Image 1 (cartoon, rainbow, N blue to C red):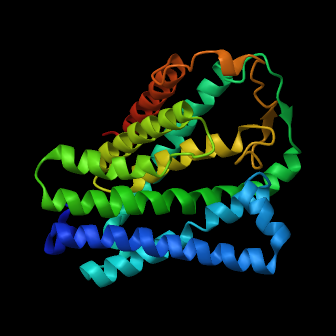
Image 2: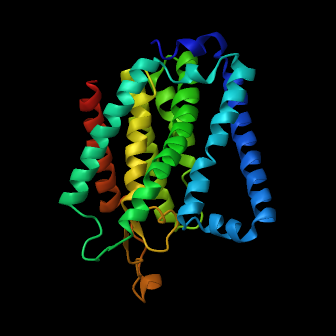
Image 3: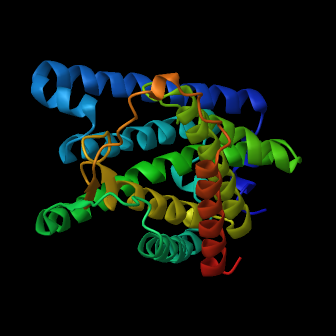
Length: 293
């Protein structure tokens, strides 16, 4: 398909592997360098960034994904002799599908949020609406940087390169999203919780890859990803938890029962994961309707 065409001239597997490692390495070094300067120049701010609770810390973390975009542009140029724009596909289609996908997914998420508020019996507290609205443009821009970076790397670069090299659909559908899911492992969470998150992230990646293949550009995937992350970051959060500082509503922290350590661990494949994947499938279908694919 046309989306894959720019990768065909340099689709050797060794080039893709080198490119993937180079992006991961250079981005990691870049983030560590940013953290080094922040810790030495503004230690108090650095402590907040590490906790990822305050609005400023979250915005710093999200905007830092711009470094991934810069690194990817350099690697694609030096390794494959092409520009960053070649990862996006047809620009006109991308712009159109981005907006349609974002609206389609956002309407679905908003409907479910109003019909089935997931915080249950806990009464959420509302942050200052004025302050939230003042931050909203910056929050959305930061989330756009973060989601665009991940889509450009995993569904743009990796999916494009593998689709140009291998005819088997499963290769470009599975391999990039195993890589995508792996970076969603959260060391500070329980093993079962992190595993569920990785499974969900893999399914999300597969849905996004499918949207790229159907539409021929990254537009729908970025819009889909942005809508998902906007609701995750900006609507409801757990008070004091990482990534909660931009949320309009905050719910009380989850309190484990005193005998939680004595209870058997909840199965990884539980009802909660099933519900999350079910909502993901509904959002994927909503985006497909919105982009008419």
